[in-house]
Amino acid sequence: MGADLHATKLLPLLYLLFLFAHASCSHFEALRRSSPNYSAGVCDLLLLPLGYPCTEHTVETKDGFILSVQNIPYGKNALRKNRGPPVYLQHGLFQGGDAWFINSCEQSLGYILADNGFDVWVGNVRGTRWSKNHTSFNVHDKEFWDWSWQELAQYDLLAILSYINLETQSKVIYVGHSQGTIMGLAAFTMPEIAELIHSAALLCPISYLNHLTSRFVRRAVALHLDQMLETMGIHQLNFRSDMGIQVLDSLCDDEQIDCSNLLSSITGSNCCFNASRVEYYLEYEPHPSSTKNLRHLFQMIRKGTFAKYDYGWWGNLQRYGAPHPPSFDLNDIPDSLPLWFAYGGLDALADVTDVRHTLSELRSEPELLYLDNYGHIDFILSPEASGDVYGDLIRFLKSTVGTRSSS
Ligand SMILES: *[C@@H]1O[C@H](CO)[C@@H](O)[C@H](O)[C@H]1NC(C)=O
Ligand SMILES: *[C@@H]1O[C@H](CO)[C@@H](O)[C@H](O)[C@H]1NC(C)=O
Ligand SMILES: *[C@@H]1O[C@H](CO)[C@@H](O)[C@H](O)[C@H]1NC(C)=O
Image (cartoon, rainbow, N blue to C red; front, side, top):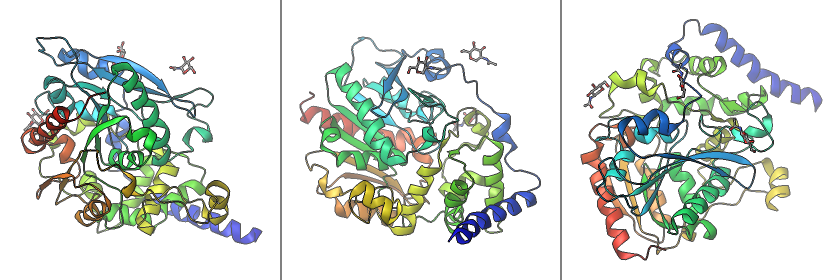
């Protein structure tokens, strides 16, 4: 038993070291070059210089994480300085709240919502550059990284949405992208969170992941990258670190993966990605996440479930009182919650088959926007998204504000 344990721990380690030793010249030096300025916040860096009102807030979760949240109460040229309906923006994996503001103010959803009269609130989940504080742990502690998207839904969303609800005395419109939709769909099954939500617009909606087509991610799953990292005692997943860059290099050591275009290899081709902005995007993205979160996502890909984290049967018995982790039941989402989904034909992460699976389990019928030529990143960074996507999103939001009571 002891020897077995050592062998299973050592082999992946040796394999990873072997891959690292062969990754001579990295494609990904740019990640290291553009180390961000950690002393400024999202308001200071992005919103205030463009003339938008913006305030920084901190919200503490039940498990002690201190999250930063930004509020843009109205648009740049607002005539009446009063607040519209609150909209909460939830970013995706390896992203932060900055993702809604890194194209021009005519192109990025965050600015567009403020300019359309919404009171915009921006989340930054635990572990991102903007939310690295905790009441008792610091980022070098293993405990700081002991969570997956399940805790992001249960704790981060509950804390932030309750805060906005209290500040605005209003239910909140939820807008999520990618992992922000996994968090949202899980959270909407929880009555204490669902009652805070007015309606929800999901970009690249994900609950099931087993039809994901991304070669890069499939390779990482096949290599058990998640278990390797855990075995090596790496709890923080940071692609700006030496270790993160080596992980990318080792995954790129495969002829079928084109790592000169890493973003497409991971997310699928994007119709409208502005490659001349990459250096600028890299000043903000990618943000760190946890290895445990990666494991949870890989469990979904391997098993085809939308369920809580799988600790193995013994760990599950202790935590859940059952050998298998309980599923999030999409049928528990109230059918009175208005939903709008936008998804794309080229998305290698939110596959159309998986989106249909999600739709088939919901009690309500979301309004749908399908774009044949859109990939995963286009929904937040396409310079054309304003016309292609956000116009319809705002039409939906306005229609729900008119029909549902706001408190
Ligand atoms: C980093 O941001 C702070 C706060 O906005 C600013 O005072 C400082 O000059 C910035 N440093 C660099 C190197 O840009
Ligand atoms: C982290 O949070 C604590 C409160 O728990 C606070 O005293 C401290 O100033 C914060 N640190 C930073 C860097 O914001
Ligand atoms: C692409 O990015 C460049 C550099 O920031 C910018 O000048 C150009 O306007 C962008 N293109 C579009 C279509 O937004």
